[in-house]
Length: 569
Image 1: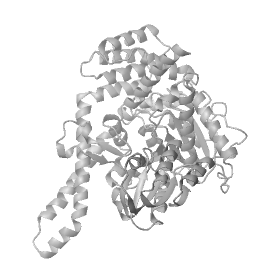
Image 2: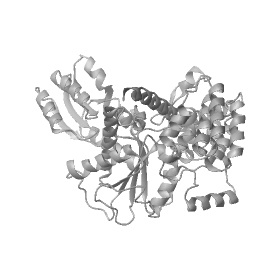
Image 3: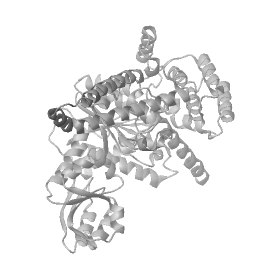
Image 4: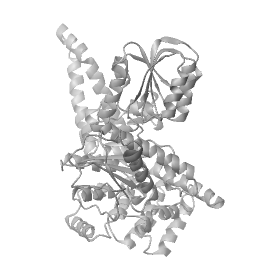
C-alpha cells in the first residue's frame, strides 16, 4: 500500500481543503501519477468538474472565473513559463499551485512577479513525482529510457537530463516516505554511480535540512543498479498474469488498450483498468501462472452465472427492490468477468499463433540450464520454424549469445547469419551491440548462477529436485540481490557506499532503483519477498516498465545514436 497511499494522500490534501467547483490542471507526466491512483468518479466527489492539460489551458482564452484552478505539475522551466503566461492573463477565480518536486528559489520569484492580479492563493510542494503502479513498485515512465546505454562522450546533455530526472524521482520517493537513506550503487555501471552520487549530494548537502527526518533504528538503503546487469529477464516470455498481459498486449499506467487487438468487436475495443487497488480478482491472481488463471476465471464465470440466474427470478416487489439495489454491483461484476475473459482469450490465441509454449521452453532452458550443444540445436530448429515470429527469433539468439558468448564463436556466428537470413526486420549488429552493452565483462552479478559456488550448488539442487513449472523456473537476478541484502551479504566491493554514510546493521527498508527499467517479473519477486515478512520491506523502482518489445526498442535506439555519435567523436 505504501507508495499508492502516499500519492493518494497528497491528492486528497490538495483537493479537500479547497471548497467549491474546481478544475484540475496537470502536465504530461503528472496525469499518469494522478490517474493511476485516483478514478474519475473520485475526482468528481471532490468537486473537480474539469481536468485539463497545462498545454491546452495556454491555448484557450475562455474565462471561467467561477472555477478554482488546482495545478499539479512538475517544476520544470517549461511549466514555469506556461504558468507565468497564464498568471499574467488569469482565466480562473483562484490559483492553487502544487508542484510534484522541489522548486528553485528563482522559480518562486518568477511566479511571485507574474502574479500581478494576486490570484495565487498558495504554492506547495507535494512529492508525488513518480507513478505508483503497485504498492511496492514505481516507475518514472521515461520516454528517452535508452539514454542510460549511451556513453557520456556521445551525448553529455542527454545523459545529464536522464540523470537529473532519475535523481528527482528518487528524491520524491524518499520525501514521500519521510526517510533519508544510505546509498550504494553497482560498481560496473557509470550511470548508476553518477545517479547515486548526485542523489547523495542532494540529500546530504544541497537539501540537507529538508531530508533531516527523525532518525530510525537503522537507516533505509537506496541501491542503484543497472538494467544491463540482467538483460535476460526483459527478453523472456512471461507466464504470470500481470507480466503476461504486459508482454503480449501491453500495460500502460495499469491500463490495457484493447483497441490494439484487431479481432475484437467495436464495443469491446475499449481501455480497461487492471489495478490491484480496484479489482479484487486481479489482486488475488496478478502473480498466478497462466494455467491457474484459466481455472480461477472459470470459477468467477460460474459465480457470475449464479448471480445472473437469481436476478432472472423476480416475482415480488421485494425481489424487484433487491435487484435495483444490487444492480450497480451486478454491472460491475459483469464488466469484470467480461474484461478478464477477453484478456485471457486473446492471450491464449497469441500463445497458440506464435507457438510460445515451444519457444518459451527453449528460452527457460537458455536462462536456467547448461548444455551448449543442445541449446544450439534447439535455437537452430526454432529459427527454421515458419510459425516462430521475428521478435521471438531475435530474442532466442540474444539469450543464446548472452549465455554462451565465449563458448563456440563459430556456432554463434552461424546463428547470427541464420537470423539475418530468416528475419528481414532484424537490425544487423543488434545482438553484438547487446553483448557490448551487457556481455560477461560488463556484468557484476552472477546472472546464470555459474560464477559463484553457492549459486552453482543451488542450481544443481534445483536440477535434482526438478521444477514445478518449466515455464516459470527462471528467477531474475534481482531475487539474488534481495537475498544477499536480507542475509547481510551484499558485497561492498561490488556495491560500494557513497560518501561516509554506512549501514549500521540490517536495513528495515530498502529501495532498489533500476536504471534502464524494471519488469513485472521483478516486481512480483519483490511482492512475494515482502509477503514473507522477513523484517525488511523492499520497494522496486525504475526509469520505465519494460516488456521485450520496449527493451529491444531502447536497444535499437541506443545502437542508432552510438553509431552516429561514433562518427562525430
